[in-house]
Length: 282
Image (cartoon, rainbow, N blue to C red):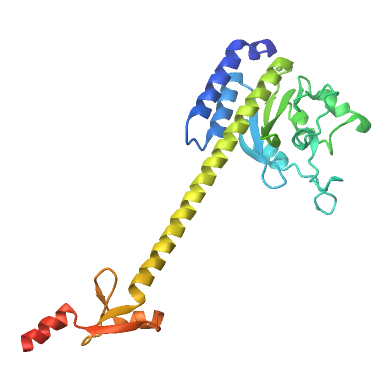
């Protein structure tokens, strides 16, 4: 499959319809994984993945086709010094390595042929990246692992949520010439949909957490009100066996009430059992 075949209207339509169907389903928590499957099935690329922000790093959230060795070496993008300490930029942000780091940091230069105005990086032949002079290389500590693993065609598309870069869509293939600029622009618009999905998932999770917190507070309030109702004021207590009548109408042993609420007052009477016993004697 060459770039013309990948950039065909049929491929775009297949991807768009699949993604929009997923995004249109309410309550889908594994949307990102499903979107990645749609893209890989339609393009038949060797490897695809989605990185998402976690703290200061951007590990792979979902992936398909990358080797375990690749994932082990490339999962973290944080640049560290010889002592293992995290390297920081002048503005205090964490230094992120290689081409992924440039895209995720928002430092893509549209004047460089490697990048688009939308902040993506793409190439149909990654080999020349190995020969870039250091003064011309926009990357921090270039790893070139994609090149060494034989991926000739590579595209890195930023995923934004409310304008903030929160991840990237990565497409790798060992064939040359898999991309066109028009197809990369299509992927950029697709990434906006992925960002929308992330917002929906986050909003759904936040709503569920708020609902659980409200349920917990309601349960605590109910228990407190029941406690106030049953343990303050005059409490019915049997004059003979000393059982206490709680708010549900059950007669309980007095000890637990006394240990928890020694400040309570009592009013004396007879529980049904004692009343029947006394009447029988009379």
